[in-house]
Image (cartoon, rainbow, N blue to C red; front, side):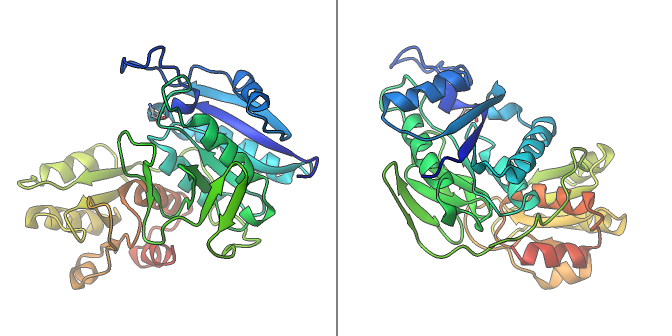
Amino acid sequence: MSDKHIKVFATGGTIAGVAGSATRRDYRPGQIGIADFLSEMDRIGLSANLVGEQFANIGSEDIGPQLWHRLHDAATRAMADEDCRGIIITHGTDTAEETAFLLDQTLPTTKPVVVVGAMRAADAVGSDGLRNFANAVRVAGDSDAAGRGVLLVMSDRVFAARDARKAHTEMTDAFKAFPRGPVGHVTPTSLEWFGPPWRTGEPARYEFYEDMPKVSILYAYAGMSPDNVAQALEGGAKGIVLAGFGHGNAPRGIRDALAEAVRQGVPVVRASRVDEGLVDREPEDDTAGFVAARALGPARARILLQLLLANGITDPTRIQQEFSRR
Ligand code: DGL
């Protein structure tokens, strides 16, 4: 590895968490500072030029626009720094999907950006944090990791942010990637890519704004009442993502209320509450003006709709084009 450093932006989560006991469930995320965390690297014999910066030390359930703004700024600076070869962001796993996808769409692809977390606290039996981190160092230090957008490293797998989502509440093998699966396999001493980079030298797809329009997710359930749509609109939603049944479906009354929202100028994206499978366009999308989320689940669909609206893309046909090219 060259002398260039890897920037490590620490935000907290279980990877910096402490259990205190092997048998109690009340562990606390975001306890270990990045300096102490990085000093562990020497102990496990990992020699890499790592420069840590503490952005927060919190559970990722509390991460949102303010921290995203700071991360985006710092990552942009690190991208421009000739002495920096890559970026690692340590993060709680709960919202890692959102942070990774947001940065994926708003940063150039010229240097590796790797989001990493853990499912077990640092002092828990069988903790996965240090191994995941050592794997992230391996990926961030590899020049072939650039040109793939933001990557997420967990359980010896490398995922692309466009596909990754948390799919298990407890297991270390907590992430899945639909529809393309992992893009690589990594251990602290080896890295295998399953294909070549597909976004080489790409500029940021969208401008980043800290102040993004409010977009609500409506989770479909049997017996759901149209009040849900009214409440979202009264609450100031500028866009709505439906986490629909199956292929992005919802009760008739909800679909009618959503079509009315579109007529009022509020774009509606149909995603699915089901974990896997595409949501493609259907004839009703043409009459109602809905957008089909394709491969994006509700959390990433919400981020993309926010980005599009913030970037002045409000017409459903244009929004559909952007969702279709994921
Ligand atoms: N509070 C959760 C978070 O920071 C802990 C879960 C985790 O990090 O895996 O996302």
